[in-house]
Structure formats: C-alpha cells, structure tokens
Image (cartoon, rainbow, N blue to C red):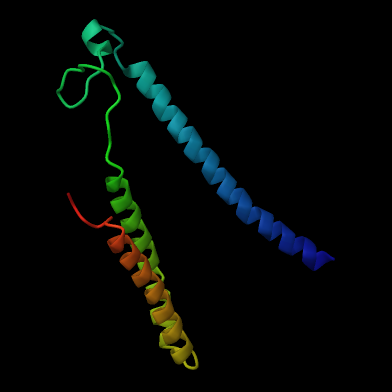
Length: 130
C-alpha cells in the first residue's frame, strides 16, 4: 500500500508541474495583453475604423469567390508530409534484428497506399494547374 501511494504521488507531482507551467503561460499572456491595452494610445478616427486590406480600398460586397482546388493542394501536401514522417521510425526499426523483412513489407504496403491515393488524385484532375 505504501509503494502505491509513493507512485501515485510522483504521478500527480509530474502533472502539477505541467499545470503550473500552463498557469504561468496563461498569466504571461494576460499580463502582455493587459500591458498592451494600458500602454497603447486610443484615438479612433474614421480612417482607422475603415476596413482596409493590402492597400486596396473596399469596394463592393465582402464576399469573394475562392477556388477550392487550392485547398485540395494544401490538403494533399499535408497528407503526404505527415505520412512521410512515418517512414523515419520504419527506417530505424528496419535496422533492428528480426524486424527487417516485416518492416520492409509494411513500408511498401504503406507506400502503395500513398501511390494509389496520388494516382486517384491525378485521375480526378486535381493535380492539373489551370
């Protein structure tokens, strides 16, 4: 019973350090925002209250048409960037004794799934830039 209490105390002590760090971080952000609010000059003018973006005066309605394909490019990049991260642990396990053949097969199955996804995106015309 005594050993369980010591292990539980160590367990909660590590979480208390994380909680204390989170509180210090929140206080730091609150102090920074509060100091900014107290120190900045507040002089509202009609020009300052005007919507402004990149040097272009706002004309017309605020809605603009956005091409969805740009999001698809970003999504494909994120998928392949994150999936390529999985190759590094496989490379380290591949060098270990007894795991070489199984790891190699798993890696090629994984790369096959990625290739099929890329081929699907190519066939759907997603990768054509117009």
